Image 1: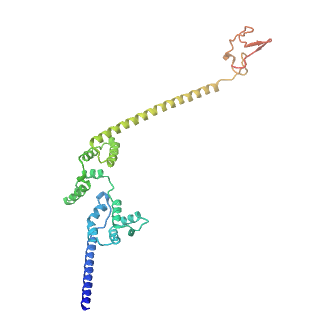
Image 2: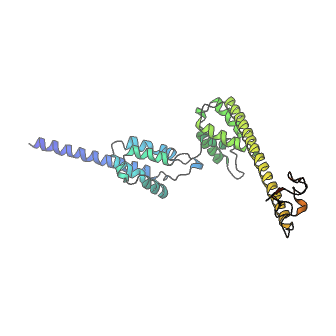
Image 3: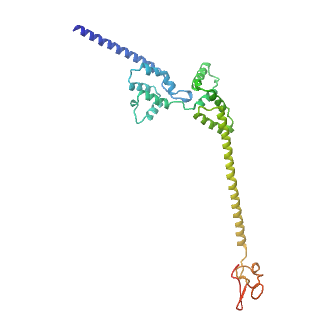
Length: 294
């Protein structure tokens, strides 16, 4: 009986020592994690969540492998900056952070705080990198190393590099539209070649010329119609003014009976078919009848 009691006591002592050892290890790991800077997102400087998490990933996935997800999530979120933490909480609403497992939390943070610029822009800016006058060489080397990693030289093909140089040289204001369209095309097509770009440029030139031609054709008829309508309005106005200024006769025309001066009557030289006299329109039963109008 005493042997069993001693064995049980020894077992409990070993468990206590193991728990104490694990606690010390956990505290050491937490201390190691605490010295890591909190994550502050800055895409322009390459401070993405992917880059930051790469420095602490082994702590979470190896040293904290036996830790439950909820605790790992709490430790991870504690390392986020105030703005980043609030953005994450707003993003996953109506869920609570404890309802999202560790791997899913990492994936969400990777998508939220990733590179904002296109890969082409990152590569273009890398080629424009220069040393500041008051910058020491170690700091400059660090910036070069960072931008070179963002450049992803290991996945850059020969055709992509040629296209990069081609578009980088389109600095003239005349080429601004082409540069924008080619950039958009390159972001969606990783297989573009120099020949593809030149073909696309020619297509854009043809499209621009066709558009200009259609605009010219649509303007000319419009101007012509406007000129015709303007001329018609002017002629109508002149005619109206002429008629409004013309004097009116005091009596009807004695040739035809209409309201106009006799000297303008078209029947003044008309010869009557009955009496054969000039100026008489028709004669019936001894009386002269005049036309009732022009």
